[in-house]
Length: 136
Image 1 (cartoon, one colour):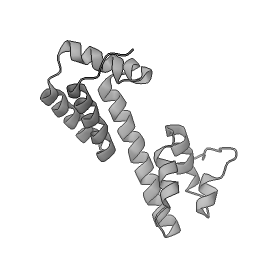
Image 2: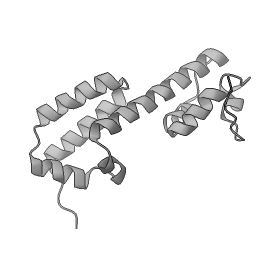
Image 3: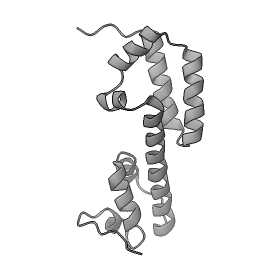
């Protein structure tokens, strides 16, 4: 049976998750994460407990700030791609497409970001097939 999660850790975790959901600018994320860390003032024991109970293995292998920075970059790429889709094809992407883009991994986002340059339709951007990098 896992140890009981404390309300302080739950609030700390939810604050960080909400921050990431609302802010994609890496510089602002870093500043706000620092603010949450200072305000939460977790003890060493609470930090250890947080790492054990809340963080996935991936998060434990990288520093907390690095993980949030990478997530911010990924969100920025997704936001830019969604904006490009709206401008190029004349209408905002559907809710389902927005969800697909915001949940995509970084390599897939890069692939779609390259494909939008030559695509004649939204379907072409997201069509499966061989990925050919543009050469300059």
